[in-house]
Each structure stands twice: as structure tokens, then as C-alpha cells.
Amino acid sequence: MKGILYALLAGAFITLQGVANARISRDIGTWQAATLTQFTGFAAALLILIFVRNAEWPRLKQVKPLYLSGGAFAAVIIFGNVTAIHHIGVTLSVAALLIAQLGLTFLIDGNGWFGAAKRKMGLPQFLGIGIMIAGVLILKI
Amino acid sequence: MIVGLFMAVVAGALVGLQNIFNSKVNERAGTWPTTALVLGLGFLASLSIGFLAEGKRLFALQDMQTWYWFSGLIGVGVVVCLVQGIKRLDPTYAVSIMLISQIGFALLWDSLGWLGLEKVPFSWKQPVGVLVIAFGIVVFKLGGARRAEPA
Image (cartoon, rainbow over all chains, first blue to last red; front, side):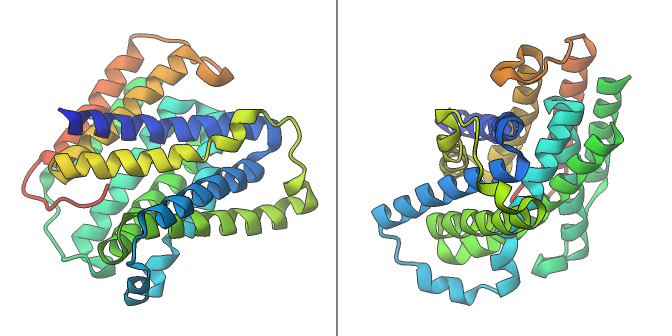
């Protein structure tokens, strides 16, 4: 039960993050909003890291540099998300974002890219994305 | 309309890719080093591109409201809740609930126009569309035998 609550909250926070960025960007600009929120988030995470004294830093060296770079995508993600929310509203933005997100996961897992163990992407995943697109069409008609 | 959809699709594809990369870092380094690294790099990337695009205007923060300084903490909230959710539930279920919650709250924000965003007029189509999308997520995540992958 508590797990469900945490998962619900995680989703609410992700959406809130996009909405807050969209709101802030109207006052100070989109790149300013992205830079500011990433900076305060980074500072907080760093503080927590020091506080929990997680000694696993050296293990970062065992990770392929390509994978370490994922965080940099956030600049474009935030810019895209904020621009989308300004243009088409939160619901449609999140819907399109989720479809693209799951669609790419589907492609990567199905082809075994980036060292993902190749697995059969079945009809359910294909159908799922189709149903989500139908949902977007309902939102728009 | 097209611009908005295009931007959302680009953002979503990058979120998918980033989740896969981040989970590889997470496997080795644990939650907080990964989170600090990811947000730190996001900051550096936003700073660089922002400076290229806007020059010194990037640092002219006018019209700041106090809460703007703290909005970055939402990202930390996401990590805490997701980690706690996955600890207590099967990851596939936790991620499915999170995705559905994202689209559900999106509709709530549009309809209530919180935080001064433009209100999107509410009609029956919206809850129906969101329910259909949520059903699509369930079919995608829980249909057939798939491993629990990061969202």
C-alpha cells in the first residue's frame, strides 16, 4: 500500500516538475529555468550524498563513459517539455512524451541495443503503444 | 500544435534513452551518486546551451519568486519516491503506477490551471482519453513476459 503511494507520488512529482519549469520559464526564460532547477537539484543531491556517506563513488569508473553522459540529455528534455506544455498543454504533452518514451524503450529492448539483453517485443507492447496513440486521438478530436 | 507534439516526442525519446543509461550507472554506483551525477550534468548542459543561446542574459534572473529557488528539489522528490516505490513493489508495477500517475496528474493540472498555467477547457473527451492512455500503459508494461526495465 505504501509502495503504491510512493509510486503515485513519484508520477505526480514528475508532472509537477514539468509544470513548475513551464511556469518559471514564463518569468525568467526556458534555459534559465532549466539551469536553475538542475543546479538546485544537483546541490540537494550532493548534500544528501555527503550525508548518507555513500562510498560507491569509485565504482562510477566501472561504467562506460557513454552511460555516464545520460544526465546531459536533461537540457534538451526540459527545453522540449516546457515548449510542449506552452504549446499544447500538460495532458497532451505528457501523453506524447510517454508514447515516445515507451516507444524508444520498445525499440532498444527489442533490438538489444546498449547491451540490453535482446528480448522479444511482443504484440502486447505493440498494442499498448497503439492504444496510447488512440487515447491521444480521443483527447484531440 | 505540431511544434508542441514534436518537442514532447523529442523529450520523451531522450527520457527513454536517459533512463536506460542512468539505470546502468545506478547498478554500479547506487542511487545518490547517480542522482548527483545526472543532475550535475544536466546543469552543465543547460548552462552551456543556455549561454550559447542567450549569452549573459542567462544570468539575469528577474521576476524571481522565492519558490523558484526550490523547484529543483522536486527532482529529488521523484528519486526518493521512485526508489521507495520500487523497494516495496515489483519494479514493473511501481513504474506502471508512476506512468499512469503522470498522465492523471497532467489532466488535473490542465483542468484546474494550477500555478497560473492556461486552463484547458474540460470535456468528457479528456478523462476518456486519459483512461485509454492508462490502459495502453498497462497493456504495454504488464502484457506478456517482459523483464522489469526502467521506465
